[in-house]
Length: 432
Image (cartoon, rainbow, N blue to C red; front, side, top):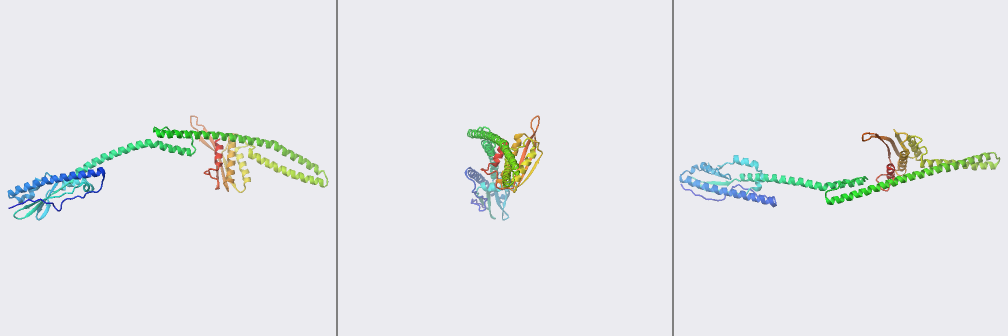
């Protein structure tokens, strides 16, 4: 019996393709892991080859090469990273199976990770020649254990990396939140100023740069608030002066112009009585001229009453507020017959004070007039009611407020038009 030993590259060896993914540190880690796995497998293959050669020599010296398939796997059982392919009955069979260990490892190392870090491996072939046949013994590397260990290391590092990233994100969220929160407050404050809420103030920020902006914002809001208060005060004075002038003009028209018209009418009536006593054309001509004077006087009286009512409602404080509003709307309806004015006035007290009654009267008057003239409305709806709210504090007194709603179907009047001062005038009058 003769035997010989040779070593070559096995054609059907266990291979892995190199992955093209990853850059920087990740790529370096993958290359290092692949190199370490390759070195570990090559070392195990070298040791296994030495054990196999020694075992074959021993069996050949004792003439027991037929026991090679039973003896060799036992000799190499302590090597985890190699597998044996032996010729049995004309077929290559795996004599060191990986069924238990390998399958267990495969569950902990995903295929994509094994393909990523698995090295290119080559097998070792030992040709055993006996008197009856020449059979090869092929030793191949099995990197499943090394890949599983690398996967466990990778999983541990990934957990640490994710934890650190999460901690960094939390810290960034807190830091950026601390920096951006004043900016969000500043944006809300600007929106409040845009809405006319000039009493808005921002809390001082701990960030020096933002604190400077906050101080400037509070200064601007304070100036705007003060300017609005000054404007409101001036408007209140203007309204007061306007009402005083109207009151004086109404007083003059009532006392002076009314008395003069009454005197003219009385004298004209006396002249008519005198002319009726005259016979002939002179008496008729005088009576005709007196009639013209009386007609003109009546028109002046009607005009005077209309102007007096516009300047200052005569019965204000004497009649109920409901009746005063209805008379106002009736007069507006007579003046604007092409527009239908519908009103609902309910649950009003007789009076809320001269100032409040006059303010409500003027707001309705100006609103309806603007809706008809500027808004070109065909229908105007006016709703006036008393609104009650529960007061705060220990006494919890009921607070009363008047609510006037004006709706119309026109299109020429809008609160968004900057040049239209109708709404601003009504709002300032109500605020004053």
